[in-house]
Image (cartoon, rainbow, N blue to C red; front, side):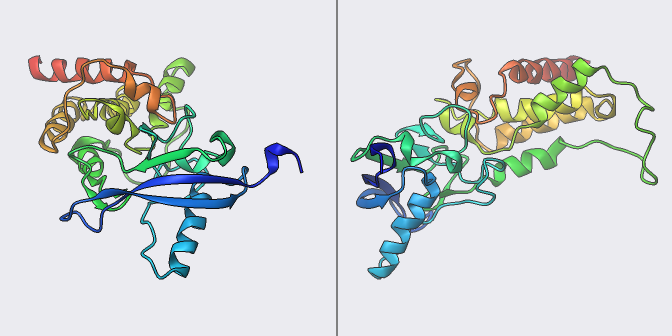
Length: 253
């Protein structure tokens, strides 16, 4: 077996917090016999199996698809949302991305609007409430419309899709020094602003989503650009510019 494939060992410093009403702290664990090709979540599974064998409480963390699609798995690794590799989710990280015998700090996303539920699990339902406030379109129910009934240029359609790939993981909020949700809200707004189907609620959408974002306690954007760097889907901060334009137009129309 080559050195690259030999099992590895790590020291983990994991945030443990029993509930949202209790204080938390970093607890140190040692893990060994980790296949470098295993994912970061598989490594946490390995640690939890060992904890259960010792009759200790396993570490709570979120996961769903484990295929880099949904973003549910988001945690901060060594201070970076989703870890050191750009444009991937936590579950897509491989342990070969971390040096053997290194120390890894694992924490939940840090933001006032993402309260810790337990350990590494945070409540991101604030995003859902922002979408409910205005992230929808009105369409006529019935049979499916003709696909080419409303011609949309290829460039416009692709730009809308570039925004629509946002998975709502919250890495933008966790990376921002102000805990701003502007990139998320901007992406959800722009994906509809560019298409004719989104024109009906345009003014209402801008006002309602920004108002809800502020009510949820997210901070304001100050153009640090950390959100774009942390986003696993590499969503551009151009979406924030769209958010600001739409909001200003809605106010003064």
